[in-house]
Length: 236
Ligand code: CTP
Ligand code: MG
Figure 1 (cartoon, rainbow, N blue to C red):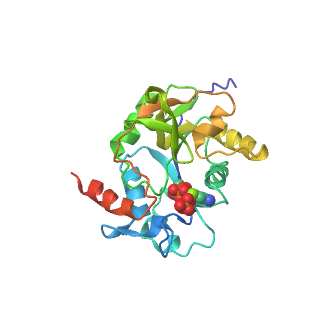
Figure 2 (tube, rainbow, N blue to C red):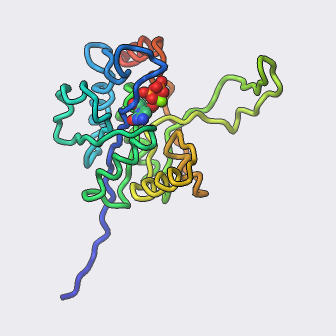
Figure 3 (cartoon, rainbow, N blue to C red):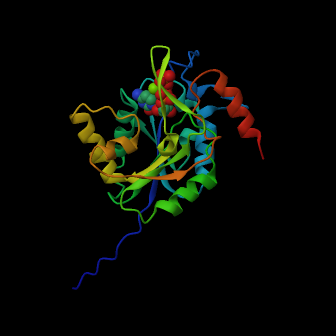
């Protein structure tokens, strides 16, 4: 019998690395479990991602010894899966992609979003998907830099950098699931430092796009960031 294969529409998978220890936050627990307006940081992050309504599923990478995650009701949400975190952020992302190997298609999209960015908006997620869905490689949310940038040596300025070509990388970062997994595999095998997903693809000579994000999509890093995140989350 003649088999006609219809092209499958790529699905979107959320990948949420949440296996960090929050060294710079220096709290009594990893920052993704700190309280913020009556919930934990990661609950805000996941609820806001889920609100985008675009997901085949969301994989959260947590440390196998993490005592906090299994106690959160959202860990049992039907769209949320749990994978083991790794030593570095890139290892956590890679493990989450491996977890999906049997249920996701290589052409599906993976949107990687830090657990520590609870102010993500559903509209930013939807907007980046609309903007990037026909791109072969994918891209990231990013922000132009407004401050004047200085190169320094010790405590002395040696140059002023042209900021017109400099952007700050945010998350989500959206790539084809198979290509991202292989780029991360190669970067790990070569011992290359990758602090975000885009850099793994850049190492292969690819040029991810940027989509302008929102300044309130901050990454909670230091104690003072919690109050700012609370302020942003309370905005209508
Ligand atoms: N992350 C992860 N696995 C790691 C390290 C980090 O999943 N081995 C996650 C963090 O949980 C966080 C995101 O990656 O959601 C961004 O990392 P970062 O802000 O650096 O968080 P931490 O590594 O926890 O913080 P610090 O660097 O201050 O220790
Ligand atoms: Mg870190």
